[in-house]
Amino acid sequence: MSIRFTAKARRGMVALAVTAGVALGAAGCGGDGAATKKPSASASASPSGGSQPSAQEGQSAAPLAELKGPSGLTLQVISAVRDSGGFLTVNANLKNDGSQSVVVPVALRGDETEIVQHGTSFGGATLVDSKGKKRYYVLRDTDGRPLTTTDLSSIEAGQTIPVFMQFPAPPASTTEVTLQLPTFSSGTVKISG
Image 1 (cartoon, rainbow, N blue to C red):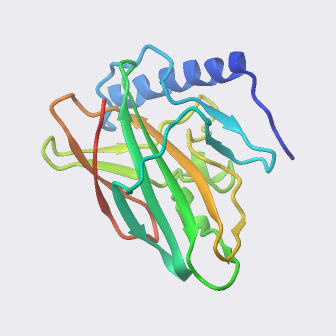
Image 2: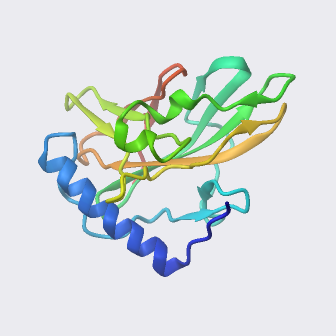
Image 3: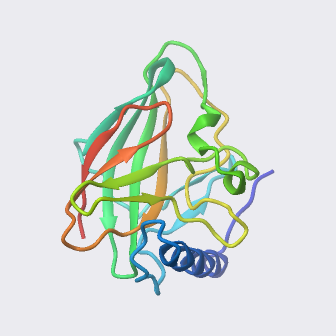
């Protein structure tokens, strides 16, 4: 099933996510509670049903980090942008460097009951702020849907798919975080914005 969101619907989803992010921050899950505006990196649904970063988001020549995964999968982090609304959006490319089609690991969604019921996603991703001694989890809307690329089933040999994950932003004094993703190696990412 393909779902398309209008700009108004995306703003509504982000408003719901802000509420969830503030609630998570208040519960001690790593948020700093400063989330009141729409994030600068908007997501749009692709024809295949998976969310992807919008075309206006630039991509740099060299990745900030490269996380190696199973079966020839690689996640190349392109940007980690903090915005004034209290969000941090990580944009990346998921690549299949192998010679065969690979099923995207369901473990990427993590094991939280609320996220698992919404299908394949990058909901298991976390950011670790070693300096601030905090772990940040992917934001989700009030229905528990993670604010990440969703509905990826497989990736063909040589194929690259743009993906995103959105988190509560660490304090401005934090300039680097470690991105952790189930079944992938970890990588240090420099924050901009």
